[in-house]
Image (tube, rainbow, N blue to C red; front, side, top):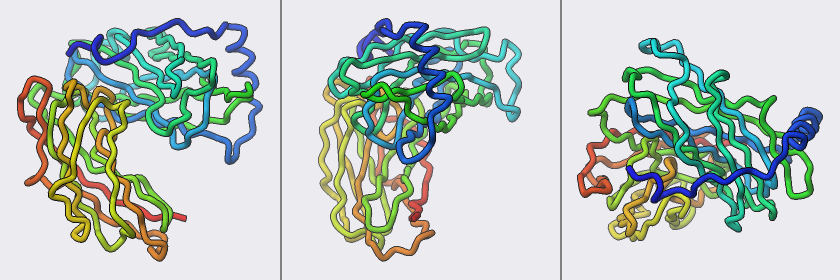
Length: 326
């Protein structure tokens, strides 16, 4: 895969060490509350010697002017032990920090001693994270001597991480770790139905979600949900951060809870950022009881994906539940 075609080369951050120390100190005294942001590191998988995309996202569109994120990588006790060293990463290849005005400066470093990936970034207009979704993606080369079945935690080191808003005030952050799984060379492409928990009466985000960095040229994704929880016609979107994609929804049947997304990627680069590359927004009824869990699944008979070179991918599909919360 030619990463240079799909990402922007890293640029040096304007943050100085003195500013970093001051901002980290300020962050330590920040108070929690409704202004906090949750940083989630998505699950990822790749083969030994392959390229993995580590994607960071938030759950709220609040502008960020500066930041630093430290991600230690730790082996999990299950599976075969790593005999070649605790850090599975051989090199940092590239990274992208997304900003609405495309003015983000960023730098990514790999610290083998601390087994951590460090990302620092800034935006003169504080337009990083002004749009909800992926905040950044880091492309890493794995060591070639890794053993399929090994698992690692991609954690968030909060004491060495911080975010600053447009006014220079620190933002309280919470972290959700991700998992890095080492696949065998014949593993199928893992495609999951995903559903973010929602409040009754609000719009639910359902999606087709990926973990593996495989560029897609075309395909069809058929998502099924319970039509009894819906209160209107679903809307479909492809976030351009995940790549280019033209789509239609012919064959969909909202009365039966079926959304069929037929897509073509002109640049054959959809899924260049792993995650929710097909998103379905479903209005929900306000009278759904809190605590209800409604199944969401991908239809194996109607779904297929075509890779960048034209091959039809073997798929492994996973289901999820849409949970209604307060």
